Length: 215
Image (cartoon, rainbow, N blue to C red; front, side, top):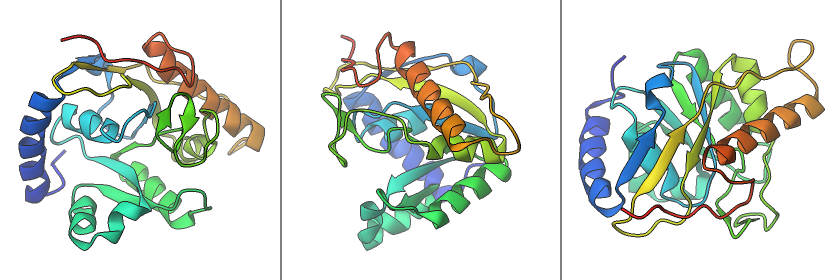
């Protein structure tokens, strides 16, 4: 597999060098991570999460990331994001186009990162919706309809400069459902289970406040 483009490779190494100084990481479990058709499902405690996860994967891992639509309103930033594998999602709405893009990425053999909670969680509460931390069924729907390999991922919560953050990749999760695409209840159960598995990797319950490890 090849990286997305030369711009991606440049940004990957430049931002990777800077982030390794500001936010050093300890990566666990990557040796068991499948190479393609993967749906990574991390907990979401900081805006740094997608950056740290993406930069600790191989440069040719071809990871797409669902990013909040507001980031694409800035012309230069939006242009860059689109060329490094990110695509916009309108939170709180039934964004059919973002779902189609996600499904196409997986079916093309690329990989995808989606936060099951759909928003940053601080003190157990979602920043975007003000609700207690919980999984949204959309992540399960995308996983089931694409046949993706769903993998829970735990990322330490509080990000402090020069303090180590753990990123733990879990074992592939095998969803159980009936029929071709399952029921709405089954999709919600799959989403709940993958989020619980992500938190459990760090010894936490959903909505917990995982703290950084000392360097």
